[in-house]
Image (cartoon, rainbow, N blue to C red; front, side, top):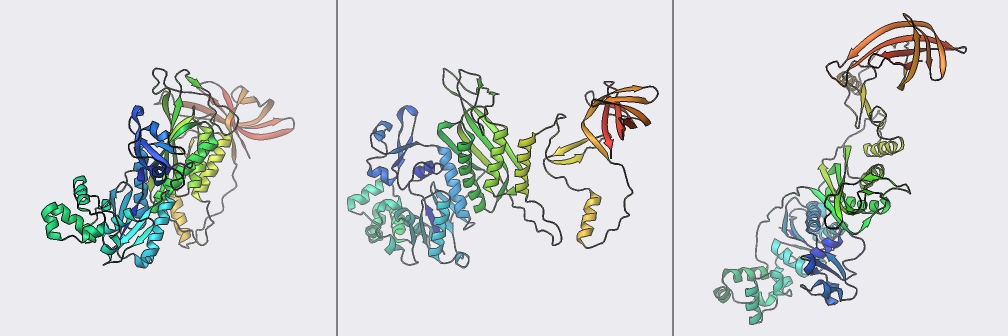
Length: 546
């Protein structure tokens, strides 16, 4: 049997610093405050803060009197996301993981030596993975779970305890590592029992007579004799990361830097579970002042200001209000590339900037399985889907999202189920081929030769979008057409072809009359299609034949 324990010293402190880049857990004295705003007290601190004079229970005013101490307010959501990240880190090594307590996980690594190497190598890999997730961790490996837990809590760095040497390796640890009850700890202290060695050498029968089964269990823990099964932890319901800022952000560049840190943390968690994402939800908490309903934000990519109306969510008695700016990013295929997601978010925020400075960032990614595809030997390579999404986003930013007819400018066209001319829609992702096309491609991949007769020459209609307004002089057929600043004579006309549809809808009803005409003007000629809209009575030039 082999168990590994990953313990995060001063877990609330590391959880508070995990999403920040200013303070360091090892280099700076840091204290975490908790409680109501009027009575904040020190909830946790690191070793350097304790050396600087910080004690648990100090008030905020007393903690501020200690020079150089960095103070952070406790955020439970950060601790929850940090614990989920720690579980994801351990899940990359073992499918059986126990969430023992906040900041501590235990994994069953029995039989993993052939895959991960020696126990010392496994400890180094666990410590490195924890560091990638933003933690400074203690790692211990032992033949039973509780010995690994106590060694990780008592020894810094990486500890490997061989089977049969548990009592010897735990002998120097203080009794507090075993977490006895306060009454039992006072009793042991009155007996002069300070470490695990002294507790392990006590006679068992007199100990059980005085402290009962709880005292005997504590002695077995000190000897490393307790064997138990792990309680597997459940998978996290969501992959979320949040960041509350001390100072609001009103520029896209620093906001992109913060988004990059959150994306890196989320992608690291997904990669630990061999997952990807195709849906990112971003919620930006805005800082809104109640004295103005219209805010001119500076949150833009350059010097251009964008005006937007803000609805106050809660602004009472002169206090700043708060609102949410929500954006959803959906991809056609799952990805693990944080850089691609960051670029897409930056382009989306540049097109839809928040109307006020950002005070809080909440990001959630929805897990999805990676889609693995194998290219054909004789097929041309298609562009990578994630990179294609970035290209489409850049084009949308350059030409706009929709045209005057409220159709998307970028995407994949698909003909709609209608007889109306030029009736199509633009979808954000590719549509599956029709059954005949799929059969033809399948036959081609199977090596079957598809022979088709060469197509006959055909005229191609070049559509004008939107159609060009025209004035038509006509009798029984059109005679003269004036459009685009020129007057053309109709040499020959074919038609009319009348069509209508959507008569069952009030707003979508249409009815038109089409003509194909040969025009001549100033020594030039051409073939055009014109139509008259019966609803408005106006004439339009729809396209030109090539």
